Image (cartoon, rainbow, N blue to C red; front, side):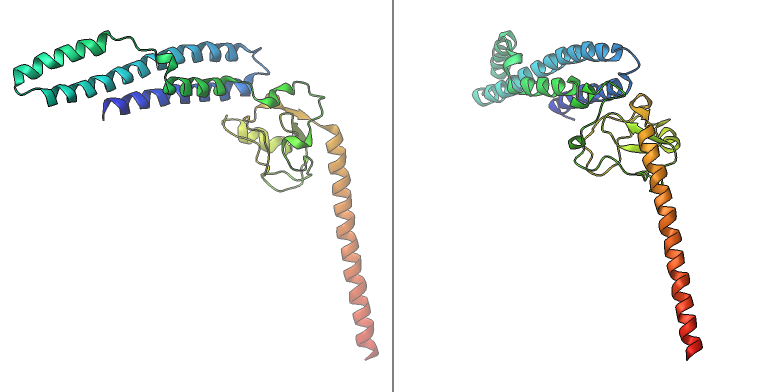
Amino acid sequence: MEFNQYADSALSSLLETTKFLQEISDGISDVDGGEVRKLLEEGARSRLENAEKIIELKTRHKGLVQEMQVARGESATVEELGRNWNERRNAVESKPIDTKNTAEYQSFKRSIEACISKPEPEAIDSDEDVVPMELSGVNVFSPYDPWTKALIRNPVRNKMCGHIYDHEYVHGIIKNNIGIRCPVAGCGNKVHIHPAHLIKDEAVKQKIILQEVQDTQSDADEDDDEDANEEVEQVADDED
């Protein structure tokens, strides 16, 4: 693997580590008092400093490679190549590099800042807050669990987006997995589901009970219609 590939791999690892820690911070921000976010921001600064050093090495390495090629083209003997290379190498190594003004550093810095910036849904910090439906772009309320498609028995609302899940199922699925996001199609919430985000919603529970009654009544009406149709058909057969 070339030097630049090692350097790029290291930069990628620094960025992915920041993304991972940011997701953990978002998941437990409601229960740790912001301690993880403080560590995230401190770690991000440290990783940005390491990235600066790596990018400086990449820039200097590129200059050395270019000067080696020039030295080879100008040298007729091995001895002359040695002299030319030493001169050019010393010139490259003594030249200061303004790493922070390079395009690569600026791009990496923006990526780190994007990772540690708080997502908009975090502004919803009260269990009683009304979640705007525009957040997800779809109807927030559905009496059916988005995973099982069954009628919800014990509803909990994700206060980060407002969508409703069955208590037992959602807690079971996130118990050992911190990477579960809202499964509702079109949901704009990118924060992984955490137990602290799930709150009981009695109003929704009443709606679901009403929905269940309506479904039961609808089924009963359909059965009555079928029975009535059978009776009519039976009378018609008897008359024939």
